[in-house]
Image 1 (cartoon, rainbow, N blue to C red):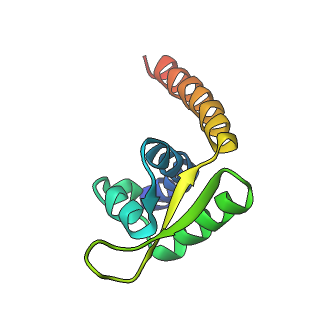
Image 2 (cartoon, one colour; image 1 turned 135 degrees about the horizontal axis):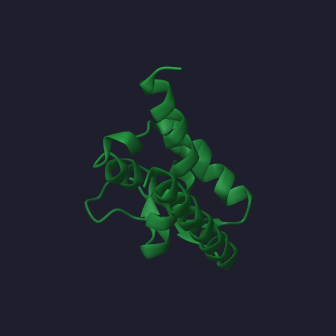
Image 3 (cartoon, one colour; image 1 turned 120 degrees about the vertical axis):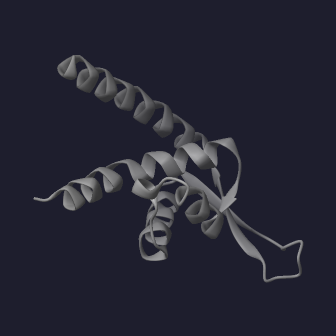
Length: 109
């Protein structure tokens, strides 16, 4: 495995966590999520990754969605918001993330 493959594996494993964290702060639409993730190249993802992940999170009951008209007169946008199940899931993920970070830090010191 080369470094690019390794980075891809890390990204896939953390993308769900990052998306849920972003949506927990405010409702977001798909393109907005992709644009926000592009600020960190290791987390940037294409539509073919983001939208299936959002659909799965909807299906699993962690997110809900609603349509909202665009202020600029563009077509309506589908926004995603957190459900209470999603908040509980994110809290559990946050605990596990912190455990992982602590373990990695402990090993590297």
